[in-house]
Image (cartoon, rainbow, N blue to C red):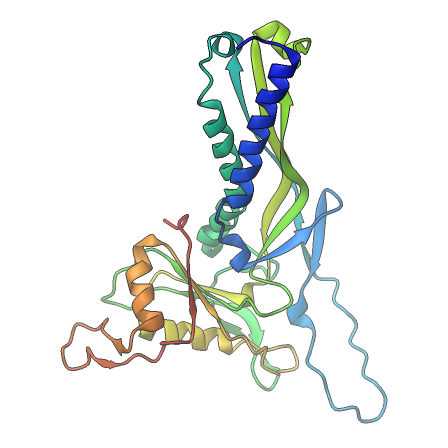
Amino acid sequence: MEITIPALQTLNDGVSTAYNTAFWDAPTVYGEYSYDASSTGPSEVYPRLDLISGLREWIGARVIERLSLTTFSVVNKHFEKTISIDRDQLEDDKYGFLAPAAQQLGQNAAHLPDLLTTQLLLAGHTTKTYDGQNFFDAAHPTYDLTGKATTVANYQTPNTGDTAGQPWFLMDTTKVLRPLIWQRRRPFAIIPMVALDSEIVFKTREFVWGVDGRCNAGFGLWHLAAMSTAPLTPQYVMALRAQVAAISRPDGTPMGIVPNILVHGPANAAAAIKVTTGEFDTSATSPTIAYEPNPAKGLLRRVENPWIR
């Protein structure tokens, strides 16, 4: 390849096309359970919507409920990846790998939200959230039907005799906010440094392409998700579903949490299919109860997350 301005422009156009095509074609899962938020500053603040009581019958004067100043925030971070190719490789026509490399950059950028949100999910049982408890915890503060303070669990572990396995999650994604937040400040784009008179080309004989953006993932509302390390069976699913359904507002009215998706990793794929679509519960080892009807059938949509390990 003769190193000329038109040749470099053609090369760069090919790299950009490869990157953008792979970026937009990459399959992702974070959108299934994350609130997609645009950011206009270094961080964004989100309200605790669980503190807003339900509507009341209008008798007499209005009862004003002043919004709580309790909020939580997500701070944007910088992410980048940079690749280069030596001028000699271009001159010797040894650059066929450049397009696949650009495609991989595009896929990696598209999958960053998946990776960051999954990291939060997997660390949720050891990470504090706005109420002082871990995001997935056995004692989140809530209220009973009379408005009395109590606690509720959105974290489930195996009963005695059962073995812990790869975690799985129940989530309600029908509310205003979602269990997780994906916050976008500046979108990812590929930036070339291939001008013959650029400093890096002059000093290192390398042509460089860099991808960068500003964004971050954060926890949303804990009451919209529940985590389990127990075996993925109808019994455990129904028990965890009942736990999150007990969450109430400060005035005692139920929050109406009804999980609609089951998020799981590859190791739980077979069990998840049985739980969500199977006619019978085949999880028990006793032959006398192995074929009882499956109470969880049809209640949840299965979402497989390949990043869960």
